Amino acid sequence: MKITLKAKPPFSFESTVRSHGWVQLAPFKYDKERGELEYILRLKSGKLLHLSMRGMDEGISAEAQAGLRKEEKEELETLLRWMFAMELDLSPFYECARNEPKLAQVEEKAYGRILRSATLFEDIVKTILTTNTVWRSTVRMNRLLVEQYGEPIPGDSQRRAFPTPERLVEIGPETLRSSTGMGYRAPYVWELALKVASGDLDLESLKNSVLPTPELRKELMKIKGVGSYAAGNLLMLLGRYDFIPVDSWALKLVSHEWHSGKPVKPRDVEAAFAGWGEFKGLAYWFWDWSYKGN
Image (cartoon, rainbow, N blue to C red; front, side, top):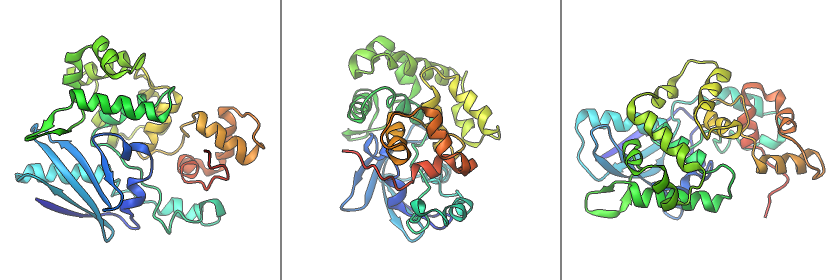
């Protein structure tokens, strides 16, 4: 089955897909040459879909290697709109950015949307795996998690969905730690899975929360393993840009941009973008940084 969806313009499939490192984390797989993004998606019914997605004029086309009932098709469309932030209106941000040379390309290239996973559970686990480590370790931990505990699509054991909370609860924190190299993160991921699987925590409701951003941030930080940086990252994924996900890379960028390479603190990063108000996170994320790193 093939589905085509239009986004609120301007929209760029490639800019969204490459907005951050999620595209490198299973069950995402991106073929840059073909401009095709693959993802293994689980529907509420438990049906697994191998999705192949491409950009089209102001939207996307997605092909699922399976037939879908009406309600499954509607669910898939809702999830795709979420993953690509297709309803997001970026015009207020673009208007603010027009007078800033460091953000000169954001409107032209339709920057601003950040690729999301289908569930907030998946995004929180992936975010926890980015804490206090280098990116290649995040990729490895996530790959092992999916390879060992994700359910394969019928007839293809190489393509697996992200593990469900219920599956991770079965594994237990110690096995999770030893089999994926998560280290101290394993108990956090397991406890999160337990709360979601038991119904004690409804993460999906946070996607459309009406809480003010500071209150939503507090709710996220109640999750073990989610500190200031992780909460900032998750807020960005939720379409809230009032906070910056300050990590060691953010400190380095701001240090070279405004402080001649001298050490800075998180408050210096926040201060650098204080004038952007509700768009602080977006301005930071898509800034044309002088320091490009190694």
